[in-house]
Image (cartoon, rainbow, N blue to C red; front, side):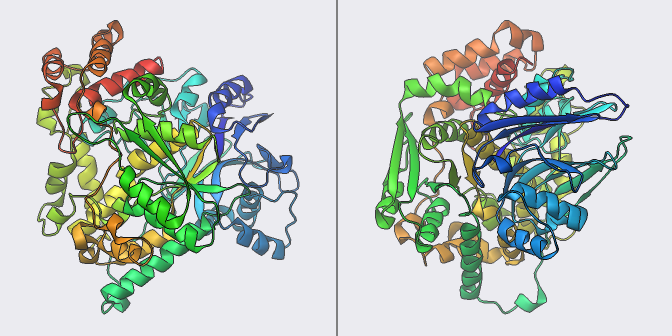
Amino acid sequence: MCGIAGEIRFDGSFADSAAVEKMTAALAPRGPDGTGIVARGAFAFGHRRLKIIDLSENAAQPMADPALGLTIVFNGCIYNYPELRKDLTDAGYSFFSHGDTEVILKAFHHWGEACVERFHGMFAFAIHERETGAVTIARDRFGIKPFYYSHNGKRFRFASTLPAVLAAGDTDTEIDRAALHNYMSFHAVVPPPRTILKGVRKLPPATIRRYEADGSMREHVYWQPPYLRRTEDKDVTREEWRDRVLDALRTAVRRRMVADVPVGVLLSGGVDSSVIVGLLAEEGQKDLMTFSIGFEEANGEKGDEFVYSDLIAKHFGTDHHKIFVPGDQLMENLPGTIHAQSEPMVSYDNIGFYLLSREVSKYIKVVQSGQGADEVFAGYHWYPPLMNSNDVATDYAKVFFDRSHAKLATQLSPEWMADEDESFNLVTTHLMMPNAETPVDRALRLDSQVMLVDDPVKRVDNMTMAWGLEARVPFLDHELVELAATIPPEFKLNDGGKGVLKDAARQVIPSEVIDRKKGYFPVPQLKYIEGPFLEMVKDTLTSEKAKSRGLFQQSWLDQLFAAPADHITPLRGSELWQAALLEMWLQSHAV
């Protein structure tokens, strides 16, 4: 787990190694254990290293293999690298390191672009070919590892974070109106290739792209599972689905144990993280460290779920750490949390993950986390109403969107308003693609392949890597997801959602954690903005920078300032926080 950066020139000039140095320096928190830059002619790569596998300098990056004529920068972890290494050794390759980075190089040389289809893991990488000058870039199936870039025709720059791309300079920082529409309507989800800024784009998940030396490009999507029922599964019972899911989840958790350092768990006390703890205990992991976080109450809403995380920690005898965040510490750490975001993310979970990661990083470098279970196994409240939908796009927008296109027009300043309903059009296009059998299947595919990537997954990567902590997400094991995609929706919707997963969990963890109301990472003080938090957001939205930008209509802001708690989105978010967070992010990164 690391940070990568680079520049490729297509106009015959040398790559700007100084720009790559600036991008690499901006990635320092992601890789506190080492740094390196390689610049040769038209390309320059930079890397910041977090040592997880092969702690020696033999695995340092950028990594070059002179015999193969390949140079790589890589961020992530290939969990099945030992098996792939054996296959490649049998094919005649020899190795100078013991990590997964070199395995990617050899795999690319041996299998070409198809190598990504063999990888179990999370990854973003760039590989330069000495003989042709071509560069191949790729991103894992769920975009767990980020890949941002700017491209002006003459040169292509990339980095693991959007702010790192900005650090190189010479980037168009005008706000993208379509992306702004997504941020305000699609619950702050801005799908690739867009970002909130016109001059920075991101590589879509499950995509591999090749740039030739002259700048010509081709790409393809290498993974897109069908959400269809298989004929051979028509008589599979609830118990058989349970057993299949449990077997696949056991494999997913076991895969993510590979490391040369200890692996812990972010334990919320919900089903998802609890079952990971249970399966790690099953695997015989001793002295397992678990970590939970809680916040002060506000408006009578509780700010922690320690009762459930305590129960699991006691049941499995983990080395448990509870972190409680008082209100003043929450305020004190909001600027750091916002600055750590590659893109503006409205979820209150950000501050929770940021502070939790800070504490966890004092003890270990790797954790497993429960993100993805709700999107894969139908845990959210908006799936059941879609079961018999005749208009899935309209019905999905009703339950998920923060506001309609018409309402947005009364809140954004006219000059920032998109001409079309960008968010609804985007969602409709994705929902109506072929190979999804039912409305629920369509929504699950959208949420797991689009929403998940640019909300929960991005949040966890940004907040953990701000403290040099690697987070692994077993529920996004692609074989587990492929299995889940074939399961009839009714088995997932059982028991108030995630039915088949709960069935599997009952084989592993106490029922008290399963038979409970669904929890979230609660941060009540950011939902019911008052006191010093209200003053902070007011100061932000009435600042000279905000006024000159003029994103929002003043009449709407005045309504929000007068009664913040009266303006809550359908997904229980604060409209005032959503507006303020965007402006705070723009100011934090001097946009």
